[in-house]
Each structure stands twice: as C-alpha cells, then as structure tokens.
Length: 71
Image (cartoon, rainbow, N blue to C red; front, side):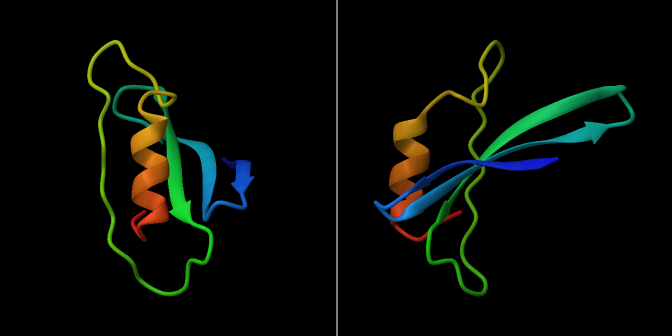
C-alpha cells in the first residue's frame, strides 16, 4: 500500500507505505522521500532508524537528500 502524505513545493514528495514480510508474518512500514521532479533513474539511499525507532524518524535527512536528487 502506498499513500502520498505530503507534496512539498520545496522540491520533494513523501510517500508512506508498507510491505509484507511473509517469513515473519508482519507488515513493515516505510517512508520514501523523493525529488518532486523525478524522471528516470536516480540514486537510492536507504536509512534505517535502528531498533525502537519508526519511519517518522529523521525527516530532516530525508527532506535534504530528496532535495539533492536522491530517493
């Protein structure tokens, strides 16, 4: 499931979603920050919040990376 939660005029889009980990029988939520003008391939950076965190962690980092052209 993907849901756009924020479309900023400042050059990035935020998409919340989840994928299913069948081996552990659980849903794994994610938050994707992407450049607003996404066209074609672009570099991907995966940031993990670590144990006890959530996808809401480190929005400043996601925004800045997306504004710089990373997903």
